[in-house]
Length: 199
Image (cartoon, rainbow, N blue to C red; front, side, top):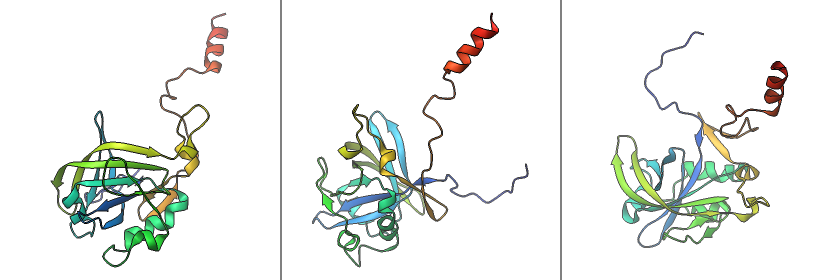
């Protein structure tokens, strides 16, 4: 298989498309769409977002050191795109998109009520990298919409129809291919076949 050689670039796709809420010390808030985010540690639970210095939300992150990652869905895809291309300097994104402010439990930043999962974060370190600065943060609390809990108490995010972002486009996640560890699990069929081969 022939492959082309490209110049260095951030080619890890698809990536999450999340709505991050922030606020300054005076309580003025904003929503910013972020694609560069992810898990960096499970214990303690830590995450990050990377933001350009030119973004309106940047000074809010510096002032308070708090933000909320709000997971997005197919139903929120229009608002997700809008909050990434319009600036909070010019309008109130909550009012314009019809999204509603919810109360966080650990930070002084609103959550997005329509989001199935809200991840409340406090910045531990800002790392200046170049085009973007990384805000490395500890997760202080997680709010999950009970409508996506199954009868056994397990959270099923797939019911919310989450979305991802890849090369300028938003996508639904599609069908499930397997579960963690499925590649090494023995199936009933393989066990039966093994017994027959030994007889």
